[in-house]
Amino acid sequence: MKIDKVLIVDLYTDEPSGLGVSPYIDVYPRYLAGAIWHHNGSSTVIHYVTADEFRATSWLKRANTYDIVFFVGGITVPGRYLDGNPPTRRELFRWSRLLTNPLKVLGGPVSRFGTGIRGGEEAYSIRDLEKAGIDVVVTGDLDEYVRDLIENGLEGAATWRTRRTYGFVDIYAVKGARIVRMHRRLGHGLIAEIESYRGCSRWVSGGCSFCIEPLYGKPIQRNIKSIVKEVEALYWHGVIDFRLGRQADFYVIGSHDLGTLEWPKPNPRAIRSLLTGIRNVAPNLRTLHIDNVNPGTIIRYPEQSIEITKTIIKYHTSGDVAALGIETADPKVAKINNLNTVAEEAITAIELLNKYGSIRDGDGVPHLLPGVNFVLGLPGESRDTIELNKKFLKEILDKGLLLRRVNIRRLMVIPGTRVSSLKPRISGKWVSRQSSFVKWVRNRFDREMLRRVFPPGVIIRDVYVEEYSSGYSLGRPPGSYPPTVKLKGSIPLYSKVDVIVKGVASSRSLRVETVG
Ligand code: SF4
Image (tube, rainbow, N blue to C red):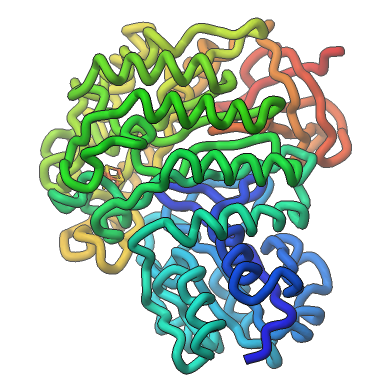
């Protein structure tokens, strides 16, 4: 088929390992653009637009002039977003129905797993999407589909194929880097999410009951040199903020056991060469952060974990967060759902990260702090679960430890995950119990922790204003789980300011004033 003009609409992604809600740009649209330019020729016209721009402007009309429109995205672990607003199911269906000329292809986690906007709900199915007028639902990798489409035509293109190596991706990632030039946040805090491997080492035991990562099967890794080349290409196109967030556990990047052992031995040397390589090709980068870390790895391999933590602190930028998937402090729930770790082990991992990571930079910002993820609604949950979760967080407070953030998600039941055959606690009396826990965390725990992590006098640089509401401007610096700051008055959208902390404004935001 003729493919002269292609539109990529970024519906945004949020998965256990990987974020692509603005100001983040995820790997999906970048790899997809790279695959098209590589196989169809670099003169192919590709335009990239986020869901927010598609919604707000006349894109819908314009989109009818393209040969193919790719809708790419999927929210499998819904959160609250400040800058990007993922489309609702109704919106996506409407867009699809109103586009009459182009071939409409849907891909990313939305096709593979279905997707939802809120936790506590069943994700909607692929059949619903087909009914909405999508021509092709790609349940495999979009870049694999595109290669097939260009080589074999529409009829011969497999929609289900997933990559088993990163050979082509390493080429696509470099060639596709240039679509960042079309992102509205380039030059205003655009963060590129970088992938190092896919899948989870715990797939050998089935993994956590609710998680999609084990569904990818045996993990596959990229080689360090290819990741560095991709960062170099993105940097060349103007990206200065990076997060190495697309993997289940940062501490096992480059491990020789990944794919064969449930608990692979970390490879500190590989992580050092990744971070030094990035620093060499992007010498003036502004942000270099990480994301997920499995607390079970830290418990099993403390020596290597200490070495890795020290390496991160040497080469990253401060304000970094190692998000630990604790999910519950209830051992019964942990067992039923085959989770990572138990509460005592999690505390040990948090202590280790505090010991080596909580040092502050010249502005007073801690270098690397743990974050904690909870999932509510897991099978086995009871009244005790909520009390145990609270006890766990109180212990952290009593021990004087620092946590950058507590992320609480309600379970989203994704077809194919083990939890879909168990009994999730996502309705009725469970919801109000869970809400009381969320309230307690936000009102009691978060405020106290925010005071400890960002006491008055800390300076936060390069904050981008992202919203204006009720007499205040809200902004965040680029990074992994950055604090939201609240400034009096109306400041133009995406302006950049340095601020000094004056106090805590809410469970998630700081009261600040501008400096300089
Ligand atoms: S450890 Fe559990 S939650 Fe984390 S990626 Fe693996 S299966 Fe998913």
